[in-house]
Image (tube, rainbow, N blue to C red; front, side):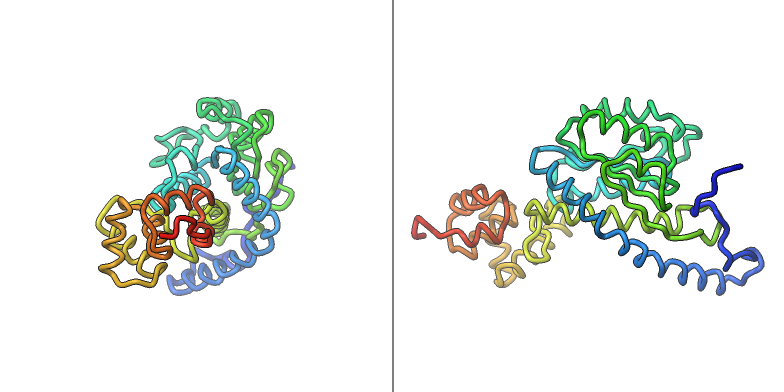
Length: 302
């Protein structure tokens, strides 16, 4: 008898999906989507464990590496590529691997997800170490590529996390930490790019953002390590400095220039009325946490 898992079962509310009006299809999709945040909320405790593991890796100089296939793999890559512009991280610090390699980002590579040895090879190519955290993303929780990657990661000594959308998922038994977001059957049977995809996106958002906050990439609720790679982000940095240091736009722009385009340094310089060198020293002593750098006594009397 074939294995039955929630992500592959039929949704009783949409048994006649092909006969429904567009309005009714959109309504039922919206109603089903509303259930996803509550399902994620049920897993907060395990998501917190995953965040702790990632922060531990970052503090040791390690990395966060997502592995997945299909939609799950693309979601990991999406989260990874957004970290450098948002948090000023090195592109190596958060990475995403997808079964089938780069070609699979744009089109399906059939059979790639069935090869557990490929995941081990992909991780080995990244020189995976015990400092890293590997998060396996698989809606079904049974993707061989993900399970193979988790097994290799555990053997290497890395932190391992499984994110699935089924209870008692197979991948959960291959990871130190398991996050099982049970979103129920999709409106289109087995189409896990829908609720399951939304759930996984919410989870990776929570993990990466919380982890970055945990290593000092945020001051108050401002992205103070934003990279100034285009005009929009340069303007955002000036506004961030203005809000964080409670100064006008022109003052913020002036200090951003004096801080060599580093928003964190500009904020500390303004708040402490100190030099670039002193601000840099304070941030170094507090591991990059702006709030803690501001609290440091100004020993030089500047």
